[in-house]
Length: 298
Image (cartoon, rainbow, N blue to C red; front, side, top):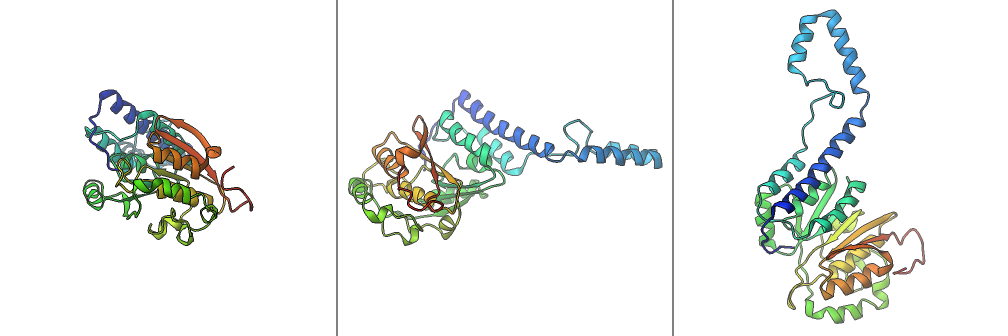
């Protein structure tokens, strides 16, 4: 998901910053409202201190947090969110996706986070995704080892794994035909699949985690000799169907291209498509293990 350099316009920086700031506000507000007992406890302790030793109480007032209706204790922005704000505020390169596209995934993260979030691709938006999933588990898989090393030098907190793809974009039509054969319609662990589209070289963690969100924004797919996203799209759908229960939100970017368009409609299924914004499609795929006999596509 290594993007071409894009210079940031002021309106776009403001919009991205607003998303992060709103997320921080709701995170902090929820943490205050989840612990309503702290305020009366603080008042009670302060009253006792005044009765026993007014001078000790004065010193306590000078060193503790100022009491406010919403802030009973000192609170600071979590490190991952602070890091994301500083990174994007000081960068002149913007994420590949537009604000409206980012907002689709952001709304799902607001509802589901902290959660398990798998991202195919490591890019300039990676810190944003990890920050919006604060407290959750965000994992990136990337084809370009040199790009991983470069990003990790600047953003060492990101969890990323190097993967190798054995397909090429010019093979897409043949792979699409093969993907409609019976072995590719069987739901199970991708490591044991007989379908040629199933990715078997991903880290074990990818297969053994029930992912709440999956974003397919890699590997490279804009020229014939690039790996293409055929296997990533198919495998994302297979992982979603193979979860024990519940459902997975799957996002595919660059659906204006032929491969992303055809493979997302075929293997993530138009019946599971919930919305499209610009070049981003959002599918919601339920577990196929909770109901035997469920068709591959509805």
